[in-house]
Amino acid sequence: MRWIREHKVFSVVAAIVVVLILVIVGSFVSGGGSSVIGGGVQKIINTVEKPFAAFAGGVKDTFNGIFKYKDLQEENEQLKEENKELKESNNNLQMQRSEYEELQDLAKAFDFEPFGDDSDAVAANVIGVDNSMIYRNITVDVGEDKGIKEGDVVVDGNGLVGEVTEVNGNTSKISSILDTDHNISFMVQNKTSVLGVLNGQGKSKLSGYLIDDNANIAEGDTLVTSGMGHYPKGIIIGRVSKVEFNSDTQLRIVEVRPTANFKSMTKVAIFK
Figure 1 (tube, rainbow, N blue to C red):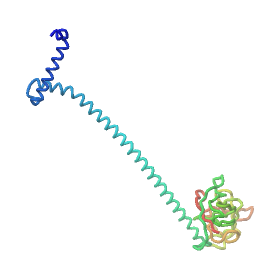
Figure 2 (figure 1 turned 30 degrees about the vertical axis):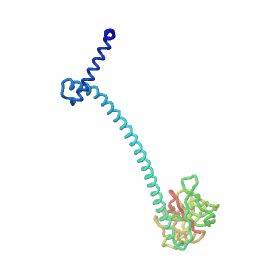
Figure 3 (figure 1 turned 30 degrees about the horizontal axis):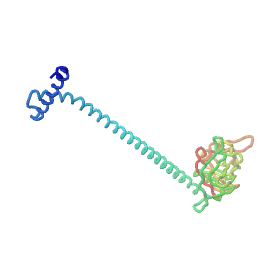
């Protein structure tokens, strides 16, 4: 008893704790709701338990959110990769379609009079041009490896391009009809009696004259190779854009726009 008197505070607290424990035990034994004290105790427990439950739920939601965000990030990266692959596939299909269309256009060269299905031709990709805006000199990706030789005739699907002037192992150089070194004998398509000579101007057009200054020629007429000179007969050269009489030379001068697609030429056919 002396110890209890000397430790009053501790003894009171201990007694209260023991009472509470007994009340709680009694409450659980009786079902937790049969007494006022039991109900009060249950409210105290619920009050204490509620913030802890909320905290635990918040932690759970936070972790769930973190994992969901990670899943979304992974899904987003996967979608980006799939989108990239689809774009690459689409680009490849477009390139294949473009190349197919270019080859179809190139096949039209076999419709020119000197060429036919039995002609020996090689398709070539343009890999280099001169520094000017006009394709006067062209480099292609075929050479001795494909049996190309100097003097071979070069066309695209629209008309005459020029001739091979230099051959290497797997490349060749072409001098186009736009080069000033070129002279081409021509005739008017479907008018074989109308003859003349054209030469390159180093620009996007050709200029020439008619042998007979009384010959019947007009703007829009199509000119083809005459067969005299280097080029075989019947290859389309271009269309007449201007006709005028030069009083100094006493000749009828013609200006011609080539039909070959020099502005965006990517493929040519070389006839051996």
